[in-house]
Image 1 (cartoon, rainbow, N blue to C red):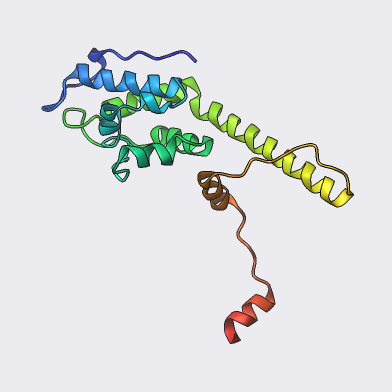
Image 2 (cartoon, one colour):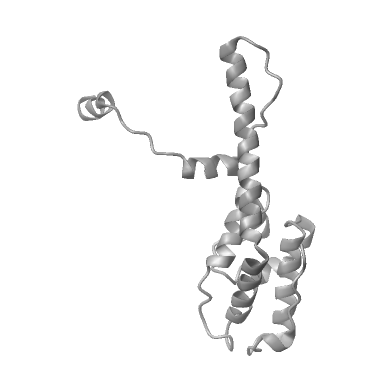
Length: 179
């Protein structure tokens, strides 16, 4: 994927950060995304600034941030959506809101969310087809020619979040009332 390069002239310096520092952060973030989120490119400096942008303040350590967003495809999709859907609050004279707006626009223009969404759909379909093959083999009495990788914790949480809610039966309701 092509890499977007930001120039200092695109950003407003703050009392605490120069326009050059803002451009450096924007370029590091875009390079990190373009490289598919490798842990070695998620430097302490990149983490420190990113944890103060895009509403990411709740992620209080680098390892937790990595574990939440960069160890699975669903996490990467969530991360990209966080960046592209963030409303970029604040004045660029005091915050990195200009960097947030510029990187968000670059991410959208490069189609990263769609690319990672498509990868996630393909990965899910592959997993589901493998599960289907195993179930067909189980109930047809044939031998399965495929294996299914176990879901990671992130995938389980992601799947649970989007799974349809179970509908209680009358017996469940009755048990809850009188049991």
